[in-house]
Image 1 (cartoon, rainbow, N blue to C red):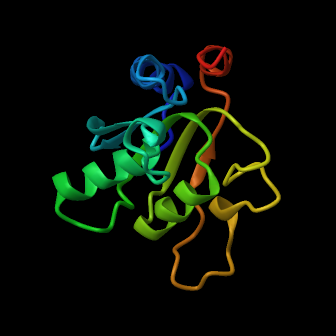
Image 2 (image 1 turned 45 degrees about the vertical axis):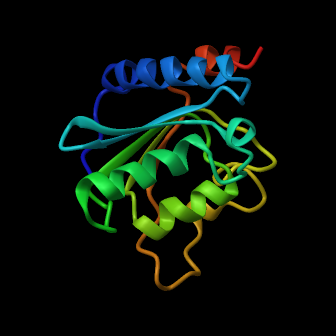
Length: 150
C-alpha cells in the first residue's frame, strides 16, 4: 500500500468524524470508520454496540463487514482502514484476519487498543496464518477525534 500525504488522510478522517457524530447522536460511543479501495471510500461503519445490543457492532468491524460484501472477497490487503479511534483488540483481530495493510488512526486508546495496549494484536508476528502487520499511521486530526467523546 502506498502511503499518502497527511492532508489526504485528514480529508478522509473528516468523513470518519461525521460518522462518529452520528453514532454519538444515537447514544453510542462516538467512533466512525471507512474502508478505502483504489482511492475511494467503499465502506463505512459507525459504532452501534449500545443501539444494537451487540458488542461486535464496532465501527471498524462494520466497515470491514461491508467491504467484504461489496468487494465479494475476504482478502482486503489492497484496502485502507481509516478510523477516528484506534481499533480495539477485537476489531484488530478482524483487521488482521482480512489482511488490511494500512490503518490510519485519529486517536489511540491505550488499555484496550490493538496497537498501543499491552496486547498489540495489530503488531503481532506470532500468528503464522496472518500476513505482515499493517502499516499504521496515527495522530490524524487527533484533537478533533478525541474531542468527539467529550
